[in-house]
Image (tube, rainbow, N blue to C red; front, side, top):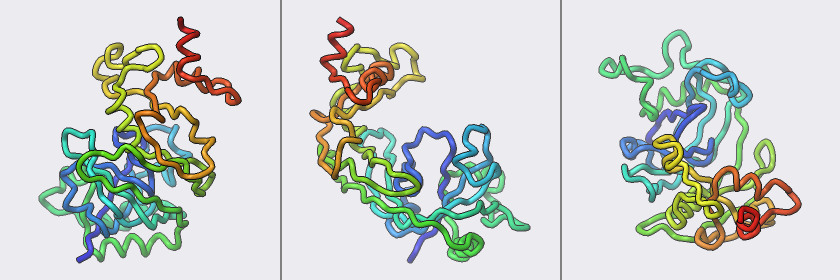
Length: 259
């Protein structure tokens, strides 16, 4: 039996979402976001004008739809969070308001006071089809496949595949970032800076992950070993490593400058 859901993507969020490709979510929604679940993307009212170029409307609206593909554990989460891939993503040409006379999503009486606080909301087929019918044709973006995860996180994941959406960009696998932090820790491998030590709880878990061979130089998908291909660096060191786009500095070169 098919499942249907609305998934929320906020302008600013601690979750590692990639619109139309990867959705990061807490385990309270694991029974809803299962492979094959058909999803509609939703975003709330805009709070910061900086995000208007990335939205279809300032008001709360639906902006695209797709389907849940593979679902994998977030190996660094202590709370049982998960990732799922989003396949066959289409983005609406225009924003679909959350009301069309009445709310497009029927709100149960038991959840009327806090309904919109739920990041994932299960809906029925009729509601799903009603929203889709209002959208007209969308623009198809390419899909990605997340690597399978079971048990211990594998150390090699492919990166660097050229993908065409509105512009060419390079795929960066979120699992590799997490594995790099797991292997190397959160201290800058050049200067030793630690964000949590400096900024307290605001800096906890924060660090930049640097590809020792820039992803932009990859001409095909390659397997990444986070232990030898990635490094963790602070923002300042990362900026200096890439300051001259024609001469990416090595960690050793930057260390010698500090010395």
